[in-house]
Image (cartoon, rainbow, N blue to C red; front, side):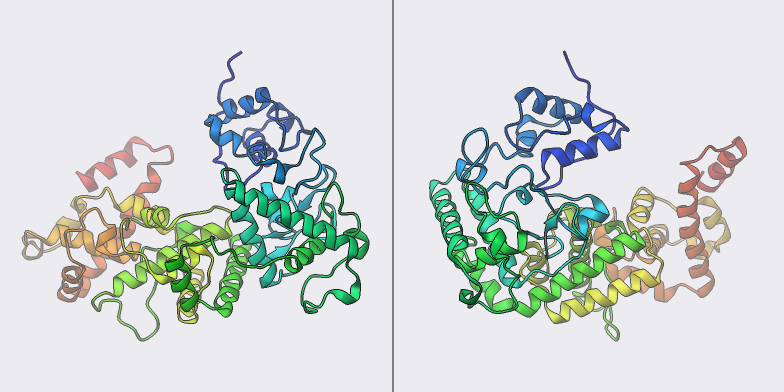
Length: 470
């Protein structure tokens, strides 16, 4: 029997488990979750019929649907036999959640079902048992570093036998240490997560069920860095550029953005194509637009991350209308999670405060509305002196002026990028205050008229729009 796709089909998030995606798919279409996937189904050993049903309802490629399960990972991770024992996978009765983002957004990760990831990498805090008090405890930087290495090894283990052997030996060391460790033999610093000896002793066929204990064991049993995690030239460049303080600054800024996402409905659409320049700097000096557009790309990526959506630099640049601009250390540091330098952090913090003070303007909507505009409304041309409108380039420069004024972006993000920004700034200096006010009102009217196209309109309303735009 052929299954028809559902009308609302959300995109799977990176690392999202099948059970979480099935719940989102059902909720988006107003269905009971059992209509998409049985409520008791774990994200492992999923029958092909059930997996194909979810894929058909969501119109997913079979390979994409399979990535939502743990079936593609080797036995060293998912365990052996029907009960999935002697691997990294937790017992089926153990459920780890994030006390921060799971409560607010329902976010879950597939690897949270294993002892490989006892922390939330988005919120940088330790996971907790489902149903426990929601208290977010910041994770130690060593733990975050270990988890990042283990996640890279887990992905590599799908095709590389060497990575599987590393994970197998690491699990054996954790199991042996859990059976012999005592409170006086830690010797790793009191700032690491607390270690529950009773929970540690339960590591046998299944890993220890306590997240903080697992985190402490992972730090003790092995190195924090993976030599093969990044190319040598990239490791040298990043190690000389970013420090531990930069990583802490990035984590703090992401935490702040998550607060505004939850309480102020902050979205990536609220980012202009150019961030405001630092106080005292001139945004019109040569090259300033590039640095401010790179900063806007970084802000777009950070807000998307805080909203639960992973975004590449290329996707952020495309959304801002500036695809193909060269990257920078700021963008690379955020893309790789290496850190945020102090100067860049001050720029982003000031820009965030300005966006909030302006009332979170939807710049993406402004770009979408003004991009198709190819000529000034007839009512604007009629109100201007003929000596002004007779210039052959006036209409194009006026539209470019409106674009820069209302989207806060460079001409590179405009459909007419052949007009240099300096020509628009010179045009701004030439026009008189009355013309400037009229063009500002025209930009506001273009944005307001777009709203009329989304609501039922009368014949008189359409007649007014026809008169204005010819």
